[in-house]
Image (spheres, rainbow, N blue to C red):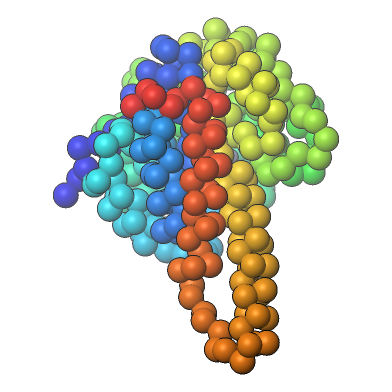
Length: 306
Ligand SMILES: [Zn+2]
């Protein structure tokens, strides 16, 4: 059965655009990350985009993560879009459409290997094919022009040009039907920043005015809160958060392991047996991820909008 709360992401990002907030798109890699994401959205009464990135396929079968997500969506009381992040080929997008995803990103900037750049024409071609397939199913499409910054790169040199973006959006439309949102480079990078990023909210505004569509910020984790607020005011309607979840998980795991080690040492000293329990180790990490996600939902202004 399909949850009544499942919606295409277009609905969520357009409502966000009309009201001047952004919807967070949070990456799930397993049951606990998915549970943390849903728990935060329910608590904050926030619309939700939960996403699975193509690279997760190297870790687990995406169908297994999707099964957990759709099960959680069954009980959801907030609207939720289930989104493929950085799909790199038509075949991959089809696999996720079959799972019932309501939103997909076709990242046509790189070949399937995630390294070799695609030409502009190749990006247009693969994006058009995805639009044709997704639109007949009522699924929203996010595309990307140029290449978004990676860890260790100088992101300030690769900003999205409004003219180029406008041409791309026009070129990829199929019979007048185009994408629903565009990922743009405005100074952010995937992963964590070293030093302070320069976020060009003036460029966001230019792009938003010119394209008249919701814009997507990738690499939102290391951006200072004030810059995130400005970028959302200027037209960012979807902000991807992955690294922040990983950081919250890691810190909580380290703390719980440290505490556990002390308890084991005490048990050893007292001649008692150690009690190993996976649940006791993992539960605090899930709570910490929920907190980190809820904080982002409040920052983006999506809290209270479900
Ligand atoms: Zn990204």
